[in-house]
Every structure is written in structure tokens, then in C-alpha cells.
Image (cartoon, rainbow, N blue to C red; front, side):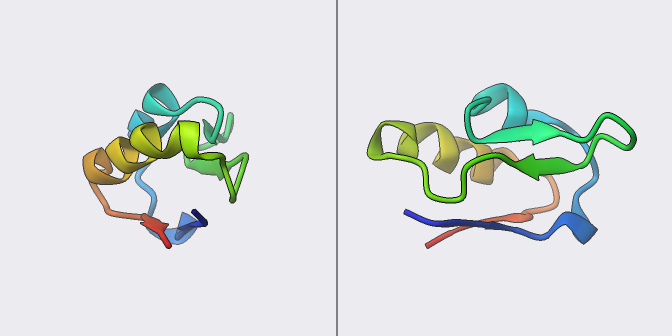
Length: 63
């Protein structure tokens, strides 16, 4: 699994960081997403998929 994000479209809701904190974090200045691990292991798959589904601006892509 590989994750790509579009930081320019992120609204800073923070759902991704709450659902998958080992993969996503938030910028302290504006709250936008920070990708901590672009290739997380299979054990993170369910959390990453949930984060992508819950993202209000759909900035998370999983390939």
C-alpha cells in the first residue's frame, strides 16, 4: 500500500491523525496533514482506509 496526499486541498479537519496517528499528523501552524509514513504495513490498512473515507476534502489516495 502506498499513500499520497494533496496538502493544498487539506482543510485541517484532523480526522486522519485521529484515526491513523502512526501514519498521519497535523502541522502545528495551520493544521494541515503531514504524511508520516507513505508505505505503512498491512496492519495499518483498515485505519488508513477509514481515514481516507472520512476525509472531508478527499485528499488521501491509496494505491
